[in-house]
Image (cartoon, rainbow, N blue to C red; front, side, top):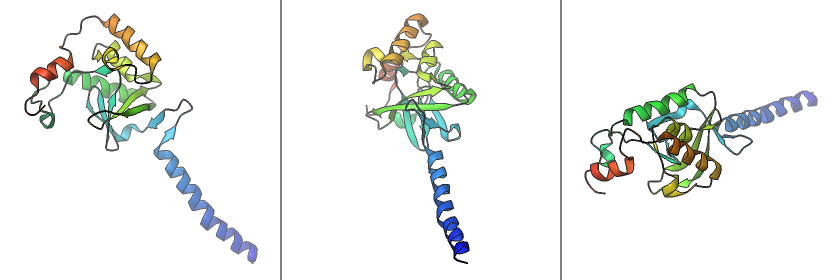
Length: 179
């Protein structure tokens, strides 16, 4: 009789603890390289270089893509190629089997600064290779990722002249309201 009570007690205590551990582990899993695995279901593309994950805005390191209309930030029209850059990012994330990220703090807008990886490949690098964004490594440094940054710089040199204005310059000319 005591043995039956012990088994039931163990089941009542241990099984919920195991379930709790499994559920918690599914929310944020780190890979062996220190990357955090991201569930695509909770990832929303805001523009070509910014996503939101579970309510947290994440800005890609190393790249600047054309802007989309965003009245809250003073942009009342899309920059040319803004939709194309956002769609490129959306499609690369959609076709990836695994999406992970590594972080490097926050920017002045309180966005998490990240390198997002699609099937192990840096998305910022894909964007620059595709001619969908300007590199920002030369202006802001490597963000603690020197190998990726060097690859982004090389891709930028290979990409040549892009068909749209540097987003930094476009923002300065087209932002309306308080700066």
